[in-house]
Image (cartoon, rainbow, N blue to C red; front, side, top):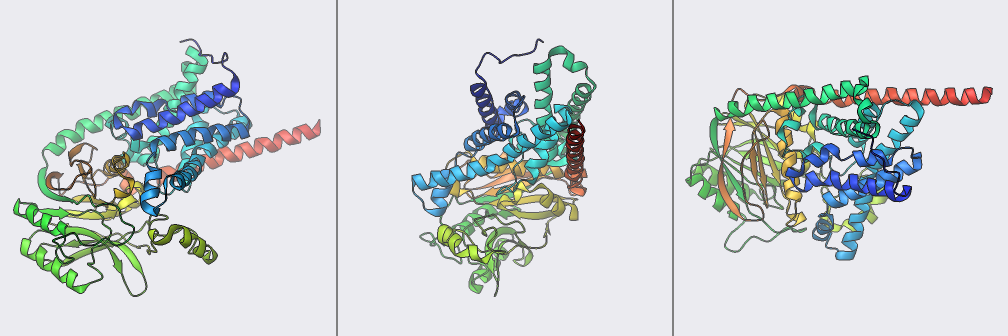
Length: 525
């Protein structure tokens, strides 16, 4: 293959266009999982744009890529701001633009670091780019963690290795594949004979070999598991910053979700899961608590639901598991709160920021405390591990919870995504839950207020799903084996990233040393 040249296009237009192209390619798998291939080539245009770029220009090109990627993938942000804060279109778009610019820095800083290291060391792109991108991307303080792996749930062979190294390990393979293709396009046939290219190609082939073998193992194995009947309640409530009124014809003691639970129990549900909700009153009103327990006892059907728990001094986002006899078998307090939704960052440490922050966010931003421990309960042989909302995005947190009692575990995620309207965001959220199941090799139940509520297997295969943006109560089949669960990643969820950080630190140290040597040599002459 001859080298590809882009010299005929003016340099500023060429580099800027290539950077924007990379951003669009990055976004495509998040917009539809069947566009997964774009993620494996996404950084090729950016790498061409970065050839010979200064540090400042690398940062600018990375910013262009980041803005294009996240404005396209998270196009729903203006609608979320409008629903959450009640802003008009102009103010909502302005707030979303600030978000896109901020998130873009995760890619901009990675591009800057890569070019700086490349200039200082001259080491191969195959090493510097993947390590720089994944280390910066993992460390950057996003509102919720993002991995490129979450856009690959339509390509299961490409993400099976996450049970070894987690979603960030998938990101390393993705970015490394782009770097490998870039070198091949830039240098032609001679590139593939270099030791670094041979090693990288071997790693990629081994990665897909492992992924294919894992699917061939897991798919027939799970077909032999028992099927458990899980009831999913999907109320499709509209977004509400304040506590919503009780629906007509219902009470706090017997809300619409409880009526749907009765229907599911009559149809033979072994367990019923409600999604995250705005307010139920279970923790606030003793009469509601007593009514819930009595009705569950009458139905003889265990129930998992979420509600805000208020104590004398604190408030938590909590998930409650009621056994078939109506007793509370477990209560989980959310450990990773949603910034600007459940707390305002920095306000706890810098009180002077509280007044302007509260003035802007109003009642929409809660003041919830952080839970400090995982929780689980065994329901008829199924160990339920509940997590709430965007805890689906935090691989190490979920792995820690699974690793406490991995055998027979089922992850249960409860989410409320009505803030985002009828967009692709709920599907993006569902993909994160699927990835957590692969990482830990456990089945996943994801109950979402507005859908799609899904059940996925330990190989990431979607077993069952509900329609989106509809109100429904349905029974879905959950494959379950009481002896299966857990993975290498479950046991050691931080080893890969810490190793990567160590490699990055060594490369930076070498680059700094090379810079001092260069200055010393220049001074000597």
